Image (tube, rainbow, N blue to C red; front, side, top):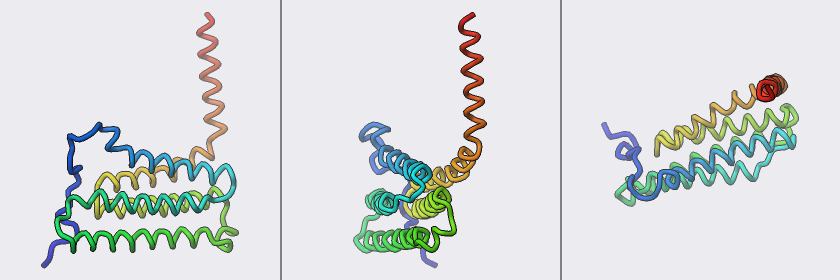
Length: 177
C-alpha cells in the first residue's frame, strides 16, 4: 500500500532559527485578524463582504502551498500540492459564493451569513492544514472556535456591558477612598 499524500511533510518550519518568532507567525496572525474583521464588518454593516472572503481564501491557499513547498523535494509532488490546494480552495470559494447568493441570503440574517462564511472558511483552513501544516490546521480550529464565541458575545453584549460598568463603578468607588 502506498503512503498517504504529503506523509513526508513536516509540521516544523524549514528554518526554525531564521527571523523572529513574531515574523514567522505574522502571516497566520494577519489571516486571523482579517477573518475576525470580516465577521465584525458583516455583523455591523448588515451585509457580507465577499471580496474579503475570496481574497482570504486565496491567501490561505498560497500560505498552504508555501508552507509545504520546502518539504516536498520533487516536481511531481509540488505539482500535486498545487493542484490539490487549488481544487480545495476552489471548492471552498464555490460554497462561500452559494451562501452569498441572493436567494440564500434572503433566508438568513447578515450576521448569520457572516458566521456561516466564517465556518466554511474555518473548516476549509483546518482541512487544508491537515494536509500541509499543523499551524494552518490550528488557525482553522481557532477560526471555528470564533463562530460560537461571536454568537455568544452578540447575544450577551448587554450583560457584558453591565458587568464591565459595575466593575468600573466599584473600582472608581474604591479608588476614591
